[in-house]
Image (cartoon, rainbow, N blue to C red):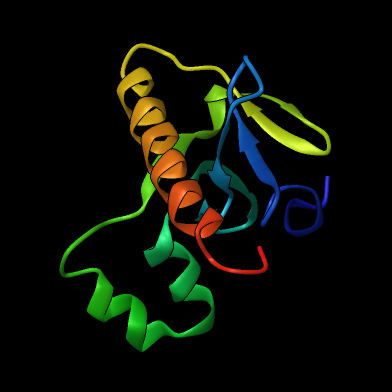
Length: 113
């Protein structure tokens, strides 16, 4: 699997196909002499900014942190990245869903959208 092509910037959805945002980052553990292990994916403005504007990410990081979803919670990778909440991830996925709803309300008010 090509993580950058197949996962990064793809739509993140839950089991009910509700949009939770985009995959903005991938966290992997580097091990000497062995292949890396993917630990989790990140969602949020700080993770996105870290890729393009590290200084902005550092500034934004004072107020918020990206949400991390464990790799074990991912159940399907296709056009979308589908996640199934485990014990502690349910609250995280509800937070992401609420954030997506608020962002959609703002974006829909922009003329020409």
